[in-house]
Structures are given as C-alpha cells and as structure tokens.
Image (cartoon, rainbow, N blue to C red; front, side, top):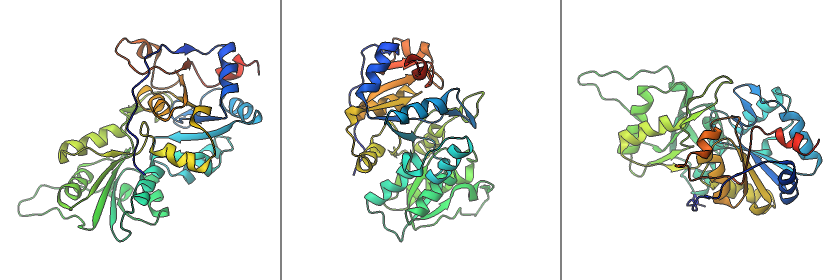
Length: 310
C-alpha cells in the first residue's frame, strides 16, 4: 500500500451552506469525516454546538470518523480526550497520523529487528510500540542537549532504519542531529513525516507552529524529502475503506484547512465542507491565488444543526 498521488484540485467556487443544500448534503452521504483541531475543538476547549451536532448526525444513521494530522496522541489517547470533553467516540472511529506512520511501516514490511527514531510526541511512540516496533527518542530526548566539542563524536544507533517526524513541542538540536545522522548515515533509512501542517490550533486562543516546521528542518539538514502519511495523502483513507464498507462518493470530509483536509477529501473522491472555525479564513478561501475550493463552506460544524432546523 502506497501513498496516493494527489489529483488536480477543484477550482469551482465553494457554495455557502444553506438550508437547502445542507439537506441535500445530508441525504447524499452516509459518513462524515471530521478533522479535530479547529473543527471539533481548539486546544482542550470544544467548539460551540459540537456535542449536539454529532448526536444529531448519529441519530440519522450517519457514520462518524475523526481523521487528524495531530500526531501528539495515539488513538487510545484521543479516545480519552474525547471522553474527557464529554463526547462518546471509540478508538475504532479515530484515524491519527501517528497511527498512519506505524501502519505505513507495517504494510511495507519494516524489519521488526530494526528501530525507529521519533522526533515527535508520545502518540507516535505508543502507536509504533502497539504495532510491534522498537521506538527511540520522542519525549525521552526532550531534555537532552547536543554539545559541540573537539574530538567528540555524536553517537547514534546504527540499527535505526526509519525516522518518523511529527509535531514536537520539545524539538531540540539533539533530536535534529540524531535524526539527521540516521537518515544520512544508516543505509536505506526511511524518512517519514506524519504531516506538513504549517500551523495548528494547539490552544483555544491562537495558532502555533505545526509539524511542517520540524519536517522542514530535517529536509534541510538531510537534503531529502519525506514520505508523508497524513493528510492530504490518502494513505489513511485506504485503511478507513478497509475497515468500513463505504464508498468515498458517499462521504463528506469536514475540515478547517484547504491544503490538508479539503485536499485530502478531494484526492479521495469525497464531498468536502470547509469550516471557518480554525486555520482558514473567508479571505483565504476567496483569495484569487487559492486553487483549492471545497464543495461547501460554513462558519462552524454546528451550523448544520441550525440549517436543518434541529
């Protein structure tokens, strides 16, 4: 299984979600795929109306799946976060880029005796371990420091055959050097990125640098481009289709980012709904330089509730 090459982007103007087309959209799909940051929540705060909207969609028999590029948590940890926020979401309904990284190694028959170095959070480490792989780095290397000393060699494990890079709030020079050495000096070492998001709503009040910053640093030091397993790559979609007997034409991808969420939906053949509660603003959507147009757009997910008179 390989990452899918993106299809040409849609340039037809997006429609504002209205009472009429909201009903048409609801009737035309069997499943809604939701991004999380900027769509369901911002940081640890739910966006208004989310519980009621999800409950309404479930009551109408719609399948709900949550597809997130944020790799800081595993699916188990995300299920716990949903629960603490008062939402009933099972682990099987969650597809994270941390899970996608582990599954990419699994389907490509990564040698179990080899190791994986992680520049990222506990989510990646946990998913790798659940898949049966040995993970190094991650949060454990958050406090380590690389020092420039004469006649001192920075040692790295020669058994590392893959470096996975994701969102890492504890990124440091030690991790950058370790990952760089593994990719440049270990024969055949894979370079995998969970995603390349430039920014994200890690807290409710503002955006923060995303995994794209960490990935970009390793691209610069290794002069290599990674395999990207998160959105907009449809790698996660292939797993989702294996699990649920659904057609992509009967799915709607709901997200706040044009270059990841909406492009992901378009690449897979889904209908797409952009919400303006996260990264993308109306001015970005309307900018003449923007070539990615969703089928529909609205301010926030719970607008569906009001438009349908629920």
